[in-house]
Length: 493
Image (cartoon, rainbow, N blue to C red; front, side):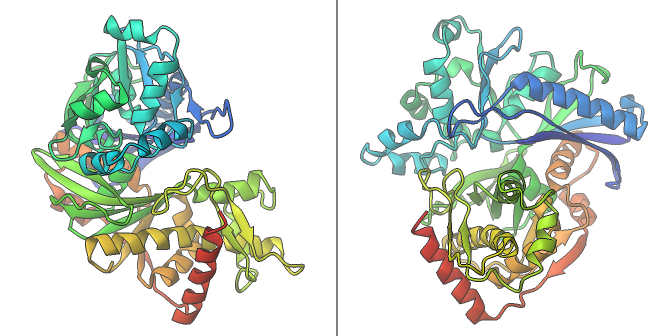
């Protein structure tokens, strides 16, 4: 049997490639950032060809760093930023326009108009598990179809392919032979019906999306195609696992049991709770999504996401310039025992779950003459933790279950002060694994299962190892006071 799995983690700000063996030893990890484009206020775009270049570069660097024979790669797994939407030529694979990123708010007006149609938001949520928001792909693809010159004629000719980033990468890896999307990414488009995991004709008509541009919906672990003509890789490597980044992290955290949950702290933050084969429709503005589909069995999840998490620390670094690197925020915030009454609501691109207020903007309250940059640093970490508090409170109401523990991953999970604050606010233990590259690991696991590299979920569960556990220390009265100040500040955002 071949010895290695190659995992491509295509994220919002960069692409990471891991090469690992069956015992989860990471033989190489390489990352490359790529440009972000902001053509107008609130608009965010990526160049699909630049994403592909970053993918090729990181694959090459990982192969060089690991010094393995690429012929020994058993399979490729893909995980990706979700909702980001592109259109490209089926034959040439050349994009018709830059991809519209999940963070982009250009379709806010479209969503507001649709919300005014009686009963429509409720119908969409029942079908898709999603709230009517510019976050998702449906209004993004409608914008492209309405605004890219000559695109309608190309659609009629059958030349247009639509997809999220998973779809684009598989197309590039197979020289256009495969036009597929996995069910977890499809569930984020607002065009898929959760019940049957198929494109929904009524939603396609509502958003004006022609069926002939859509990819085939496939499971999360099967062979979608094989490499062909990819620089640095031999032809014939199976692409055998795919999932949206947050579902991949849930899988990589081995949250296979109903009620288990994880939080990924990246640019934004994302909490997912496994609800098993049951579709739980939220009454508290959570999202219902497909976690994964293995064979014919579909597992669902509740999800809550905050648009800003690590991005708030980046703002301290790049906007206010009070730190030079993101890890410095922990040391700076640790110099003070609390935030000195400062509350920061990081609604820099609106508010996500459970508020769903795209018009909200960031606020800082409680500033006095005694306020220092240390207080602001600590308030920033508190803001990230409080955003998760809101999500978990809503999620627990929907599920009817108290969370026993929360597994954490992502860059900011390395911030021990933040993790302690999070445990304090949730009154719940937080568990950080030894292998924190859980998103890429999830993609690797799915690909490995798809080709028999791993035999089943029990194999994967054995490999998950705890590193650190954080337990609540803050007094309940202090938590109550902090939450009250936060809720008051939210009203001003």
